[in-house]
Length: 432
Image (cartoon, rainbow, N blue to C red; front, side):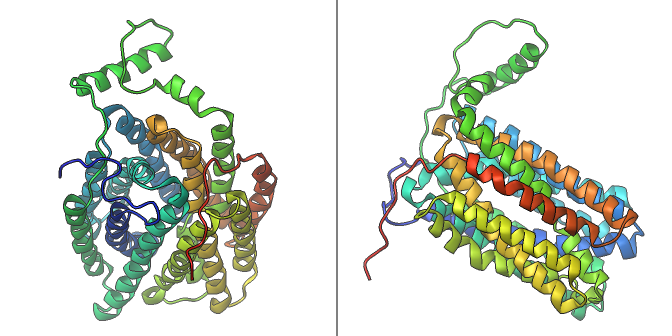
């Protein structure tokens, strides 16, 4: 598709169509991915006989890979002056991996498919978020990120529902059900290719060689050697970090502790199963979580456009702590499902808000890099959370990860005071 200028088709009081299109792409892709994700922990434990520690490490490692790759793709999108090609590559790679899950007959096969799938997620994440920030009026950023996240989580509701229907229809044949994930993933890529355009950005003619040279320069510089000076179309990594400054570093520090407190979704599925939920109905855990997430994201984003984002994040942390306590103490399936719903609410109160807060304080020239570095830091925390959660579950008790998560959520609250305020204008609510 051709480029459009940053102002084409954008109304100051309306979320741009590119955001809606990216939301639909996210919906279809998450439908595909969450169908797989909702069944994968059960598939690993019951079909392949994998330990809980291995499940926790795999889930954490998969998210770690996604978030680390996100840092590279974010910086690359800044330097080449294009977001969409990387977004297409990321969504396309994830779609291509879906047929590999039904064929898996060992942990190694699942690990390979899962890591490649999450690599695709990492490639698309930062450029997509930067593209949303590029095309959205500053006063609507919270709503735009919230809308995209809401549509994404509608797909996360539909995926596990398809998994439940498939498990019932195909008599608990998990391999057959996993084939259903192929179609929505392919449709998402088609929508992306047809419906999403990006603003024109200035790109240097020899940009490919410049990017290669840039990577070599960074590696050589890291080893204390000198490299010839040259002109660049975007700031170096060191310059980008200086440009982002202390407020950005405080956002990253908060996000890391938040990820440690959050843990991974695999433990929600396994906690529901531990409480007695039958395997055919285990995906219901992610349906409830994603529904709560979806219903909360957009309103939370709009709320954060009219009040300090720190207030919304505080509400999210308190909800996370409450969710962990309920999940730890609930004696029945219904109580566990309430805790899972609260977990979804906390996601809606935090994920889009963190993205909007970062966009507030990241100039366009380094925005992809900013999202990418944040993702890498979050990935390190996610890997630690998944690994620790698996050890706590297996060595102490199935509720131990949730008690630790609740304590970490409370510990993160004081960091909110160090977060930067909003660097944006606000808009009045529309007339009734």
